[in-house]
Image (cartoon, rainbow, N blue to C red; front, side):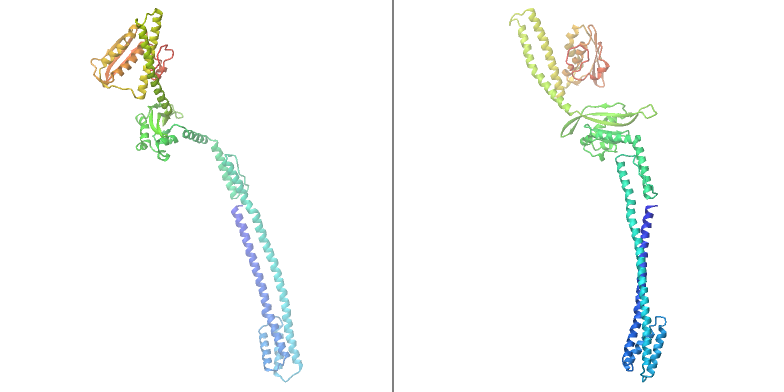
Amino acid sequence: MKIKTKLTLGVGLLFIMIVILSLVATLYINALKNDTNNILVDNYNTIEYSRSMMLALDENILEKETLARFESSLFKQQHNISEVGEKESTDLLAKHFALLKANPTDTTKMLHQLIRKDIADIMRMNMEAIERKSNLAKQTATSATIWIAITGTLCFLIAFTLLVNLPNNIANPIKELTESIKQIAQKNYDRRVNFEDHDEFGELATSFNTMAEKLEEYNNSTLSKLLFEKKRIETLINNMHDPVIGLDAAKNILFVNNEALKILGLRPEELIGKPVQDVAMSNDLIRNLIQELITNPVATTKEQSAPIKIFADQKESYFEKELVHIMITPTGEKENVLIGYVIILKNITPFKELDFAKTNFIATVSHELKTPIASIKMSLKLLENKEVGTINEEQKHLIESIKDDSNRLLKITGELLNMSQVETGNIQLNIQQSSADEILDYALEAVKIPAEQKHIHVQIDKEGQLPLVMADSEKTAWVLINFLTNAIRYSSEQSKIFIDIKNENNYIIFSVKDEGRGIDGRYRDKIFDRYFQVPDSHKSGTGLG
């Protein structure tokens, strides 16, 4: 039975019983009222009339006033007949009174006694009627008490039954359902609710069990795991110390972590779901970050660019941008498909600061080393002077060894100092019109001796007349000398070195090629790393060239 039906029947039955109780009480109260009125209006008035006539009879009835009072009471009695036989007695009383009134001189006591007897009969009838009606009123009162008690008891039993059962019928299922919901909230999806009644709670239990089954199925499904992993990845990205921006294939912004929001100075709602080109219209940093994406949108490999200087954390910070193209191979297909991009900004500020500190340290040390090295070379020259004294062959050998070491140390110091000048931007470039031929001649003269020592032939392939170019002749020659020195160092004796000089797009291009074993392909991406030397090269030097 439905809860609504139970409530309707219970409350409705209680309401009906209360109405019945009210009707019974009203009915019996009206019956008692009618019985009382009958006694008071009919019998009591008759007795009062009879008493008045009896008093008049005891007095001198022949007096005009007493006679009038008697007649008045008799008249009222004649109109107040209520009992069986009362009319006959009243008529007989009127007859005897008429005889008495017709023979006022008759003073016999016969008529007085007859009249008294008639009045007594009337009073007796009404007294008996009063007693009978009183008994009837008592019976009515007793019946009213019984029926009111029965009806009241039924109302009490119904109300007590509703009070005991109804709260439990409603509260217990709600309590069990609440406990089950708590278990579901704690991911105990195997919890079920069992209500045998086919009422609203039974339907609710069925719906709840269906929901729990679907949640259990969902929790065990791959989608749930995917969403959980998605939340995990979002949390990891947000906790990264490097700014990260994710785009879909249409270049709409999918996600931005907190570090990226911090350096961009934007809120999530200003970025998420919007085309990155629209955001770039009002944000210079975004515009700078997507330049490579716009120029090369279909690249399949990640790209790195020069460090970007951004004001972050109350200071100038350096970030290395990495643009990653996300490619996947869809199920059942063989070709990769581009599904999005990820822009990662690696914070290299601490490394930059260390690099600056290192560069300054090297520059300082290199500069300070030049003075003692110059003193050593000056002392060597004095030792070689015959005026200082004669030296033997062994001493000459030691002096030559010291000279070579000091020259090598001076060269290394010069390389360190030049490198530090380049890195700090303090190197002074003298840009002016320069001749490629003069730069080449200067470089060849510098490497002439080591090339002759190894009997290496330098072959030059040059276009006819080369134009003048804007360059620093000394620094350009320095670079060319570096190339040639390395070529001589790693070439075998009696080999060749090829120098090619050509004009291409208003640029003069120098290229140097030797016949040495070359650089293994594994190490070619490291040739510009400082202090790097190819393993097993067995050559001296710092690796700064």
